[in-house]
Amino acid sequence: MSLGRGDRRSKPRRRGALLALLVAVAVLDSATLAGAAVLHARRLDRVSGSNAVSAPALDADDGATGAFTATVDYAALFSADGHQVSSEVAWDDDWFFSDPTSYNHELAHTCAVLSAVANAESAYYQQGSDAPPYAERAFAQLGFDEVCTDSYRYRSEVLDEVLGVVEGNDVVAYTLATKRVRSSVTGEERLLTVVAVRGSYGSEWLSNARLGDGSGDDGDHLGFTLAAQEIAADLEERAASDDSGLERVYLFCGHSRGGAVASLLASYADDAASGAHALTSADDVYAYAFATPRCTTAADARDARYDNVFNVLNPSDVVPMLLPAAWGYDRYGRDVWLPALDGASARDAELAGAMSEAYARTMGSACPCEPGDRAAAEALVAGVVAGASGPEELLTPSGLGGLAGSCLGADWGQLLTDHYPNTYVAWLEATSAGDLTLS
Image (cartoon, rainbow, N blue to C red; front, side, top):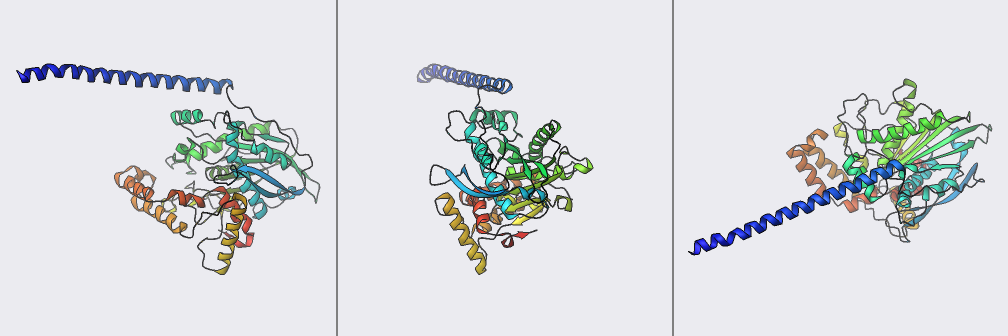
């Protein structure tokens, strides 16, 4: 009898469990439908151009011509005063009448700051934010009479990043600014366009992992390529409607992902004579990229025609070590190596101290970089390479194991201090061109 009573009592429990499961499924299904409806509504917003922060008005400084200095405000991580910091930058219109294959240290520093400004602009385009339009203000101070940050709309909100995960996100946000520059020697005028590309943001990290199969003629990283092609198409469209009659020159800059996209854009312009890429409207191209990851397997990436592309790199930064050279990856142009924090000479120690002082001056806190960071970064990359001979092996059990072991054992918080834009800005403020190594 007891067994029978146990059987009879178990049926309501099973029915209750089944009912709970059905309720859970219904709730999840409803949540899925609701989420899909929200994302669909956001797509409609994007198509109609509604429900997003509008671009700010530009208040250009008409007096900013020739050679001058300006103090540029922007947001930075881990700053002491409301996350807003300032850097004094130099500007000289004559730069854009000089040889673009000659490294310009002052221009490199200005581009490093403008790359940080491009990252900071995202906050302005988040609804409810009181962040200022850093990019518009910075370029206005530099005398630019047209600044466009429209690409940040629908690419800076949390919901847009969720939508990017669902749809795949090889898009890019960038600041585009134009001004007439005049040579102080000849009086010649040119139309300068600056493109400052935002670094990795939200779902763009998925695009960073989209390498492609490397089977194309150039072997360029697919996610970065698609982002660069979007900008190139925008520039060509603008050039087609330009009736100024002036020679067009371009300056590309960006940090991390932004640096990779900037270097690809410059390579497109350099290849224009052969018709290999879309960006054909440039007469001269200047490019300064920072913390640039290796983004191509092209055998000719170091050819002389790309000598106008300068990749400014911190030897302790793990990002320029990726994708690994052992897998056949490289960068377009030339590498400009900052001093090593763990250098053994007296000059190395002097530069390291000057960099730390420059960092503290801007950020309001001590520089967190440490001499052991380079060894830790190199060990991480070595672990990845030991587990996989190429990106295709990362999906194998041994490759995934090696990647997981290397990443889980790394102190990412410490490693990334050498990657931050303001670490690069501080190094450039503490050094001169003679302190850097060009390769």
